[in-house]
Each structure stands twice: as structure tokens, then as C-alpha cells.
Image (cartoon, rainbow, N blue to C red; front, side, top):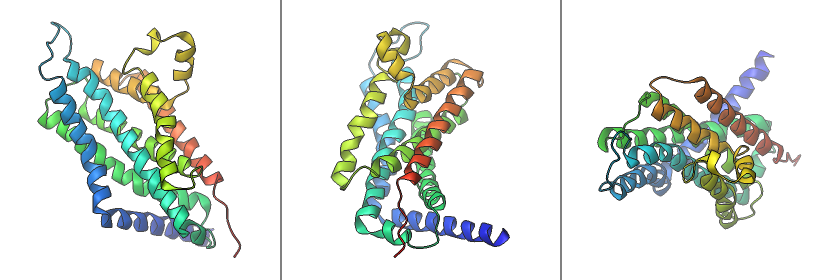
Length: 257
């Protein structure tokens, strides 16, 4: 049992390190991964900079910006992960790995961990720019916002890994973004509060993970401490990510030669 555990740990670690090295060598991807959310948050700040504030209400930038701290990492990590994983499939790297003793859960866990490390760096930089440079404010802790932003990015990683299984080219992987991300963006409560949606759209919203991520961020923006509802939202998001990773593992086919 100890030998099997050691082999599993080595395979998992080797996969994680390999993906991190590949990411580090791809400077354009690293730049996009780290800078795009921060730059878009900055653009959003200037969009709302001259918008008059309603007395007794948070600035529009504060209300929208805190939700975007979860949405932008989710979108960017979905796109980068789906393309990178599809590249592994189309290049034959994934097939070669599946001829080794490396198990499917170890493989997906390694990919998920590597991209999640990148996601944490991305979300951390976006939060640093939003709170440190642009003056974004919330009633709750900045650390809670960072936690939710990282979890949202991990959700993007999990769904990106899953989407790559149904694409035959990198272009097709990109085409999955409007199909998977678009409805979640429109129905997550950012544009219209979910309880004001038509009932059938509200039902759809209830089964989309980004709705819970945005709700968790709104809870932090309004409450000085963590709420039970926020923790429930995070549990739902984590559950969706785990299911997506498990489903992604099921799409892998081990070859014997």
C-alpha cells in the first residue's frame, strides 16, 4: 500500500511540475493569464469613474467590481485550460501518458493542481489591483474575496478540462466558451438580480455554478463577516468543480500499446 501511495504521489507531482514548467515557458500565456483580469478590472474602474454615487449606496464600481473579481478569473482560466488541454490531446502527449501506469485521477489532479496554482496567482493579482490600487471596498474581508476568486478560477479550470474532451481542435475548444460561459454570465445575477428573472430563467440560474459564486461575493460585499449562506455557496461551487474534474477523468481512455 505504501509503495502504491508513493508511486501515485510521484506521478501526481511529476504531472503538476511538468504543466507548471510548460506554462512558465509560454510567456504570452502567462501574461494573458496574470494581466488580463487585472487590466479589465482597471478598465471597469474608469468606465464607472464618473458615474454619480447614490447617497447611502455603494459605488457602482464596488457593486459590479466585486462580482467581476470572480467572473473574470473564471472566464480566463476556462479558456486557457481548455486550449492547453486540447493541445495535449491533439499533440499525442495525453495518449502517450495514458500508456504509462499513471492513473486517470492522478493525471487530472496534476493538471488541475498546476492550473489552480496559476489561478491563485491570477486571482491574487486581480484582487491586489482592485483593492490596493483602485480602491474597491467591501464590508467583508478581502481574504474572503480572494478565497472566492480563487475557487471561481479553479471552477473555470475544471470546466475547461471537461470542455476540452469534446473538442477536436483548439478552435473548437474556444467555441465552447460562449456555450458554457455565456449563459452563466447572463444569469448569474450580475446584470439582473436572480429573483427578478422570469421563473424559468431563475430555475436555470439555480443549476449554474457561477450564480453561487457571484452570490457568495455579494454576501461578502454586504456582510462584515462570513455568512452561512456564503459557505453554502462556496460548497456548491466546489462540488461543481469536483464533478467536472471527475467527468473529465471519465473521458480519458487508457491504451494498452
